[in-house]
Length: 320
Ligand SMILES: C[S@@+](CC[C@H](N)C(=O)[O-])C[C@H]1O[C@@H](n2cnc3c(N)ncnc32)[C@H](O)[C@@H]1O
Image (cartoon, rainbow, N blue to C red; front, top):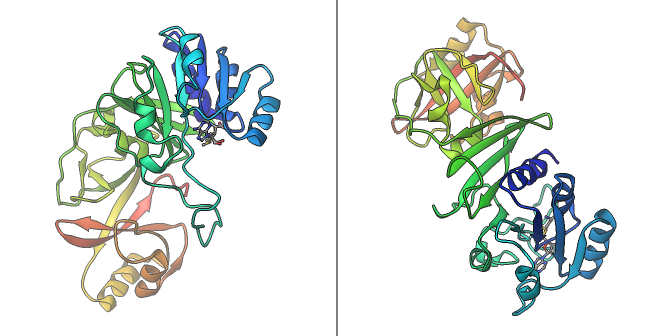
């Protein structure tokens, strides 16, 4: 709800009075628009979903229609003022699609042309202000303002605006425990160092997606550890909530036996492994090092100067 409320606030603050929500669904977004003081016309093509939408949002005008049918929107669009907003949250999962073996949820469709409505249709809506919710991995063209939103350090979505709704073209919004803690605009790109400094730093993925790390006050002295690494390195512990710091104790080198001995010398018997940049899964890393899962230390496996590096660290704030 915090994410939908944030988008509704952005739209309200940009001077809109009304939102035409073309993919109403069950009405979570429409509800947020209403709660922000906007009038809502919600279109939904599925009659059963539309009935639930009407139930969830009794103060919205609900229209059952396929928004992409020629002429379907003519009357609705002409009733809007130029400052009002058309919103689209395309369907990206289909009940008939392949299911994830673990979650049993339909897998999200990655091709934006297979979304409903397709992205090219969204991009051609004849209205000056269109807002959309898209998958975090979508790369919008520069004529859309984009805001990547993370909730508790996972990027949950990207909000797009076809007009200057936010301060900058690219930005990150960080939500923690249901509240927005910071919005950070894009900044200068950070260098890649290739050399481990005193700290490894894990940036919130929304900051990375928006290219926003370079505009944080903490950014001076920070660099990417390696090309393709999701880790930063720097001389000091960061203080921004979007940067988690891990004090570097040692880089593990040599054979498996030598690495086990290094861990023994450091007194490390339990660790959490963060290996998303490497090829081994955390359980494999732990068993190769002869230690077990635990919170005392964090072992980071990442890429640096074309090789895999394994670094033993001490987390400063460990919230996994
Ligand atoms: C991702 S869901 C939207 C969820 C919604 N934003 C909410 O907060 O509940 C997409 C919805 O769009 C509807 N939809 C897809 N294509 C449509 C179209 N061409 N016209 C109208 N509704 C459509 C689907 O039936 C589905 O309910």
